[in-house]
Picture 1 (cartoon, rainbow, N blue to C red):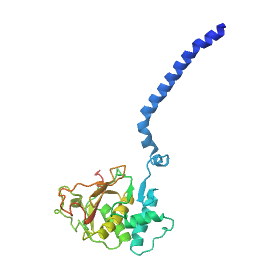
Picture 2 (tube, one colour):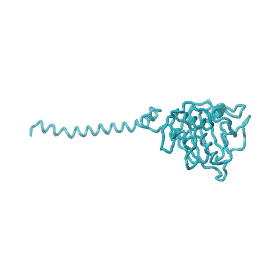
Picture 3 (cartoon, rainbow, N blue to C red):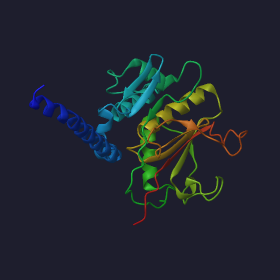
Picture 4 (cartoon, rainbow, N blue to C red):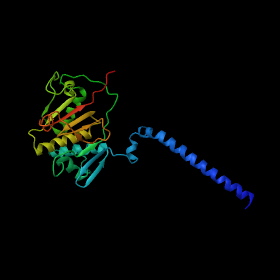
Length: 255
């Protein structure tokens, strides 16, 4: 064995130790930086393999949609159900349209989930002569354009001060109830058609909560999943929101 061979052999453990040290430093840096990546990437997280913005559960399995596609599909389902034309609906997956219009085969229920986004920086609004804030009034107008005349409640000119739970958003002119009475399978399906439409348009219309049929959706949940709603009186179909869809808008903040 030559002197050079002996020197090379003694240097190999040092190189190995140096490599392990550098890999450890790199791993530590990744751990420190990782929490900031999703926020910095913003909406690109979805396009890089993250959660889809919206999902429709169909008889053929899950169909992933971006928010624009979900809005188009939910609106098309509502218009077609009224016998109205639905421009741009020809390219929509038929299974998606059927699911949003008819609900699941075995029972009425939610068909669409969308990621929540509780926008910050919105101005606080006061109740107008209609009994609604401008944000809630815009929501009412948008619903009527798609669904036509509806049976509405939960607000009145000058506002409401009773008939709802403590600190209800109805008292602040931020909530609307859309009634589907009596409670029946057909009315439940119509209620879920509206509820799905509201979730699809939640970001655009600055919606905070949608409650219907023992379920609720929240803009504060980034997962955007429908969750079980615990009514204060389980035997009361009104408090369980079986006969109406409750929707309210974000409050905003005072300057």
